[in-house]
Length: 348
Length: 169
Image 1: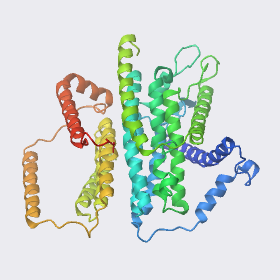
Image 2: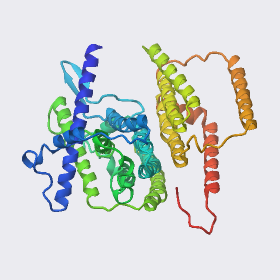
Image 3: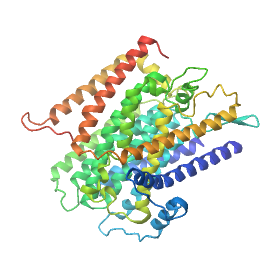
Image 4: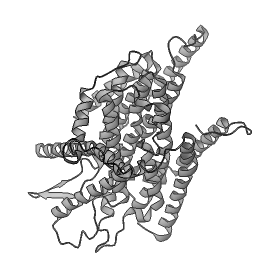
């Protein structure tokens, strides 16, 4: 029992630290990527290549004066960013970072919790993630904040539906909700077993899922809740100091976690091509697999930034039209097609 | 361990349910209701009904309560501009709630304590799906048709007049 608890606590701490570190360096990477896309240099003052920029940013956030508006609802004003951060961190629990590592005859899984409901838990956490934004926007008692919060809630509820429908098609194919089992089903890649990644079978579902992931993370082209040309700063207009930092940070954590979910569901998770042909032991394959998953996740984080600096923002009615009239019918069509092919080919 | 978790969740559920009623600010009421839903989802987990817990959180806490909050924020109710309700309406509300209470007590009084079915596997997605789609297929389909009918009704009511330009949300 004690050994089990220590192993779980160490795993939680490691994944927590990695998540925060990646989120911190995503802010740096975002500015570097933006600079690269716009033919600039980007932050280069703090340390070599500006590598200490996240530390400087964090310090600045902490030392800035903290302002709580007089007319705001003080308790909820503080609760808002906390909820945003909490829900962002909660979803990472289910990501399987690798298969099992055997030390001293005991197999340790590189996943904090393998719930039976798996992907539904992730979905539940995503669906309550909107509370942080709504509470913060409302309690600021500012019209721009309120508009941002209302936009965020409408947008997230609309895109959750299409996201759920895209996942249903995937579950029809895999026959399980557990993220670990979904990963294991894609084992091998292009190697001795010719198991393809799910994206090969579910290209449309993947496309719907990633568009919805962009909307759920409030990233460009769907960053309507904080679009600065219309709403000053959106739902966090009144926020300053580390509370603003929490909101911005939560967005990067969401990006990281959704990249991990996308990689796990559609891009083979911790599997990599030729993994069964290298003749390595299980432990080495697990460690290499964790690195492979991490590389996939970082690619998707980069993809998020790439899109942000190349595609302009949608208008609000275009966003709603795309969600309700574009993605939802497509997702239902995808479910129908998946069901048909599953029956026809007897696949799984 | 499970017993303590049960007591904690029950305490949380009852306290936050009471606060839903007693809060002056409607936004606080909604947030307490969200906490109540989470406590009830915790109860489902203790009864090893993981699927029910997850769906409960997604549907109630994640979707319905967000819409409630959405509407309340749009209205932005304050104490000053809250309309005075006539005494008759208040009286009728108390009476209706009282009758509901009597019905609830009456239905629960004669009920026997439900014995939990064997095994922790009972509420898992696989078993639940098999029961729903084999033993209870007909009621399941009927209720889904009911939901579909309600959805179509909402769209019909919410639809604009044919001449004006339609706008979602």
